[in-house]
Length: 239
Image (cartoon, rainbow, N blue to C red):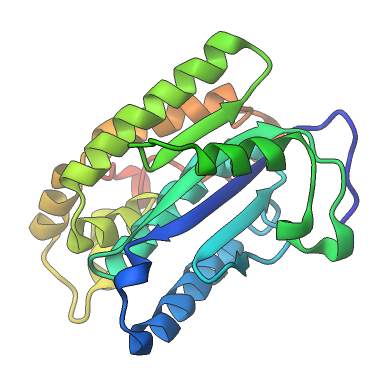
C-alpha cells in the first residue's frame, strides 16, 4: 500500500496475557482464534484494514488502521473476541495515532514511523497495570485525556467482562439488535439474557466512550459513514 505524507494512521500493538501458561496443545488453538478474530475484523472494516493482521514472537500481534477513528472499536472487538473464545485469556493493546514512514514488503510488523514507535514503546513500558493504553495526537491534553480514559475503561473491562459478556459485546460493537446478538450462541439464548450480559459488560458506559472517540478522531466525516451505528435494526437500541 502507498503511504500518504501528512496523514494520521493508527497502529495497534498487543500481546496475549496468560499465553505462557498454555499447554502446547492449546497454542495452536490460540493462533487459530487470533487469526479468526482478525479475519472477522477485516470483513467488517475493509477500508480501514488494508494489510493482513501480523503475528510475531509467538503471541504478539500488530495491526495498521488507515482510518484512525476505527481504532478503539477494532481494539475492543479483538479483545472481546479473545476473551469470548479463549476463556481465561486476554490481550494487552497499545493504540497509537500518528504518521507512518514506510511499510517494507507491506508487512505490518516491519513498518516504521511515529505511530509504530509510539505503540511499540507503550506496550513495552515497565510497571504497567493497564491493558489498554493510548499515545498520539497533536495536543497534549488530548493525548493524556485519552490515555486516562483507556485506563478507566480497562479497569471496568477487567472487572466486568466474562466470556459470555465478551461474546455479547461482539454483536453490540457491530450495532446488532439484541435478537441478532442472541444468535451468536447455538442454540440462541433469550433476549433477556443478552440484555443481562450487555448490562454486566458495562456496554452503555463503553459505548459513550466509543462514540466520543470516533467523533474526536474523525468518525463524523462523510467518508466514515461505514462506522457501525449505535442503533440496531429498525431503530431498536442495543441495551
